[in-house]
Each structure stands twice: as C-alpha cells, then as structure tokens.
Image 1: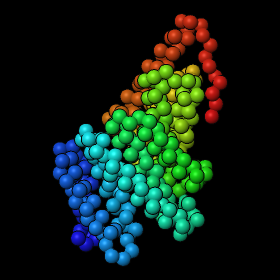
Image 2: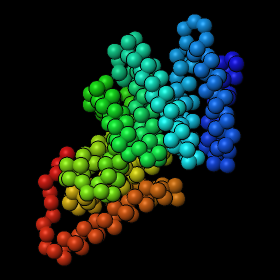
Image 3: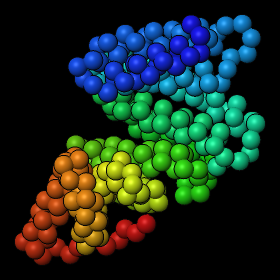
Length: 287
C-alpha cells in the first residue's frame, strides 16, 4: 500500500470513529490502518518518521475506540504501544533540535503527552485507577522535564499540558470524593486544576469554540476543588467566569454547565453547613 492510500485509509477510519453508528466499521478500518503502517515502518531501509507517527496515532485512536465500545482492557495494548512509539519519535526529534518550542519538537512532545493522557483514560475505563494516576503523573513529568515552565512551551505542548493537568485534577478529585483522602490530596487536585486554568486561559480564543469549551470545563473542576479546600469566595469567582463562557457557548456548553452546576451546588451546601455550625472558612491554601 502506497503512502497516499495509507493516508486516505487513516482519514476514513478517523471519520468513522466520530459517529457511534459506524464504530464497528471504524474498528475494522483501524486494524487495516495499523497493519499498513506497521508494514511501512518494518520494510527495508530507514522508516519514515511520518509513518511512525501515523502508526502511533492509529494505535492510540484504536485503543480509545475500543474503550468507547466497552472493551477498555483490550485498548490498553494498542494504547501502550502507541506511547512507546511516541517516546521513540520524541527522542529522535530531541536529538536533532534543542528548540523545544519549534514545530517539530512541539509536535512530538505534545503527542507523547497526549498519548499518555489518552491511555490513562483507557486505564480508568478498564478499572485500573492506580495506572491512570501513574500515567497522568508521567504525562506531567515528561512535559516539565522538557520545557520547564509549561507557559513557555510551544502551543501544542501547552495545550497538551493543559489537558494533562485538567485530567490529573479530575482524577484526584474523583479519588477524594470516592474515598476519604487527606487534605494534601485535595490540595494537589486544586493545584493541578489551577495550572490547567493558567494554560488554558493563555490559549483561550473566541474564534475557537473548543478552547472556550475546555476552559469552561476546567473552571468547573477547579471550582469543585476550591470548595473541598474551603475557598468558597474564590470558587464563586471561578464559577462566574465559567458561567459566562457557558452562556457564550449556548447548547454546546451542556457538559461544562453540568460541572459548573455541581460546583455551584457544592458552594451552596458548604456555606449552609458553615452557617449552621458557625465553623470558620479555611483560607490556608494558595497557589
């Protein structure tokens, strides 16, 4: 199969993956895509980097599709192989350029971080909660170890780091809600959400509805974290910003609106509880 045919097949699989009624066909297409790119990279001569990247992307997308179809455990293997290839590509690109914000390194690092984040969500769907946390920690660590301060990263890496921090905050928040957790765990969730907010604020663009949706979604998570650490006034401010974005999104903002509504209810409950007991509000956590 030639390069153009592989690309067309990849796009067909990607398109079918966007509609639930064609997921079964998409799965079969991804198997063909993976086989085609695997043959390309294993053929004689040096493998083209584009073929390696496409193989990793196809493996990662199939892993997520399997998870969406209720086969998350089966999705771990292709997702894990994708991460291995993304790491190999990132190392190769890093050896060629010291500019971490340049397009080649920005793309390679962002895809590695995204691959780890996507695999973490497959792990969570497979019931592997500890693995999810480990993968998210790896995603954050690889970004920090490469670019230092995330705000100084390239645009794609910055976006990927924003997602990594958002998902890490969500995972820590879930852990704190589903089982008793020490204050330190809750503070970690709030810190991760705060960092996600910082990165996504920098990328916020009214011309990009996705960036607005992501920002509103992160505000909802951050507000819920703030409630848990007793920062109710700060939660109010975050909710106000999130609600403005949801209003701008209209019907497309249904999911962020749900998170923001949960946070609003939590604020009201916390205030009612504090007023009923006379307990002082805690103000000891700061970024």
